[in-house]
Image (cartoon, rainbow, N blue to C red):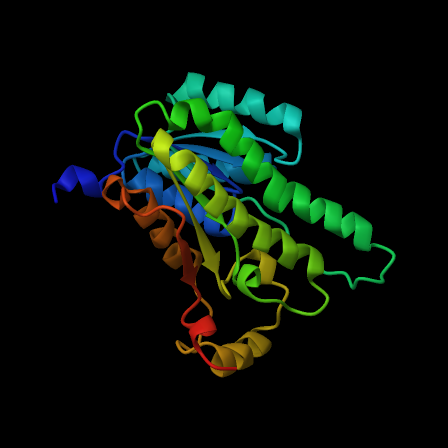
Length: 256
């Protein structure tokens, strides 16, 4: 295997939710590997921090403010990214939101709508917008971020859990549909990771959970997840399509 198959240098990568957590770690890693990175998020201030850090490290990145639940905004941002950085080769659908609500709670409908708009529908829309670029050289890569909630369930999390099951279904369906067009579509299911979404959990509670449920007995770090994303984006991963990669420290492999 030649070294260029293990490199994303010179490729353009769009990373959503890139201002924090897994998205930020992925953007930094991809830029460090020589990709031109579009840092896409809602938080303009944090976008600037990520882009500045990449620039200082010698990488190439541009920032774009986008609410991924806004269908009219997606097309415009994708067009601007292409104008600034070149045609998109890699799409990382990482933007997501949590949110729990019991099925009989007054806020359930709102939580459900928001979870699907951000966690699932936005991923499909971004693929649609980027598809002409992804398929142009028959080597496009899409990595959707799902969750171990997409492979199981937690009480009171129906909206989030259903949306993440949907991400896995979307990934498999697009892998079948787009494989013949030269676009590989895979997804990653993170387990317990130290991100903003889990920051509200007390550290002692995290430690107890990890000791009981995770064979590695700890939460993962965003950088560890980002390396899984990088692997699926490499040219060498040309025969990986429709895969669902668990990055959970062995949590789902362990009997409860």
